[in-house]
Image 1: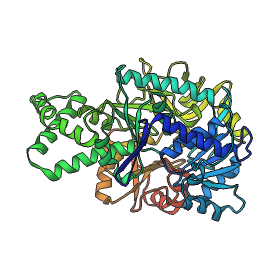
Image 2 (image 1 turned 135 degrees about the vertical axis):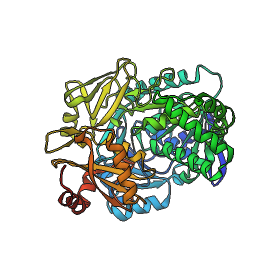
Image 3 (image 1 turned 120 degrees about the vertical axis):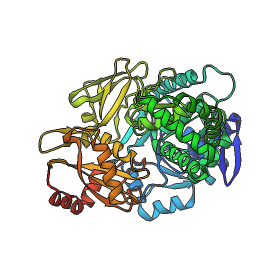
Image 4 (image 1 turned 180 degrees about the vertical axis):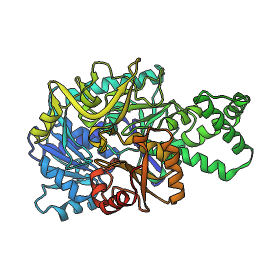
Length: 531
């Protein structure tokens, strides 16, 4: 077995030969449509075994797959398809197909997976049509401001990356014989998730696909994976869930857990007290193993985290439980990855060294620029934006970073998010937002202040003014005066994909938030005077 999916509590799977048979059926279907090499095929569906087979079949036929996020608004999906001009659209279900038809009357032909995998076409398929420099996919960026851009990736880009990711997993597994057990829930339409899946298949792992995000917590320990890819949001939720469950349970386990957590924090701050070692020993003997088994199963070697910065406190929390967290950093334009933590030398708060065979350095404003075989050739039908991103052989990431003496990188923030106060101070908001959010579990924090005299913040969620002020006071104590947040406004409704204030992979659409909350922001600066 190489792929299986959990659907309605039932596990179904396919062997390698059965997956190849499915790919053959899909290739036969595509060959019968009269397509030409290089034509685009949009793929609109939730994760499934059939998604994987369809994706591989499109590429094998020399076509370019355009994976689209099935939960995205139909208008946004249509905008991306109008840009990439697919020859056909393959849909996982009728609801997705109908949503496209209602939004785009001139849409190209749409076919359901049920039609594709019938395998009744009387067409002979040729050998694989993929060349080294062939474009094989166009993955659209999340579009934190403006329209999403289609990132073209070639077979050479992907082949190089799969060598790197496979080698790092081999290091993690220490050459262990047998199949890796992998749990996977992130949408394949995201670059990192797609590269992860290709890597798992290359390693002949057994990959179990989650098809219902509400059941991740119950499915993870059942699958008992060796490792799996995560976003920081899930790790934060896992951390809060453990705290809440033990708090509700109370008793001896809660006492040991609470004291061990305090002891661990003091150790990290290099301020240990007498007795800390005892409580950590008791927790490691009686409590932490039970927590590990309950949330991730008995086999886990590491959690892998990407897509956004992970708070160092969360990373060290899982280390306390005996669960290593490995970070990766990259963009779709870098075939999803630029750096990967070395399992033998993890530095909390950093995302590891640059992957072998690539170069990373700091340019103006400490912007990270990257060069190597993983850099994309350009954006689809956007020559001006391609020229802006690719200069003198270097891809300009738009991320601010720093590097330590051992070569481990830390991501500071986004250049375009940089707040320039009226005083001239340039401030990346991300680290301030993270510090405030640590004191407000479950809340979202957006720091503002461009061109103003001081910083302010929007705080979402079920938070009182007293709680928000306490969080600001605690965070402000960590920063110099020009980085301190002097005013805030509360918003009950969270920012979400549905209300258009988050991208499809959970990043803040700062320009949209600032525009929609202009009145509330202006009022903060009218009422509160700079100190």
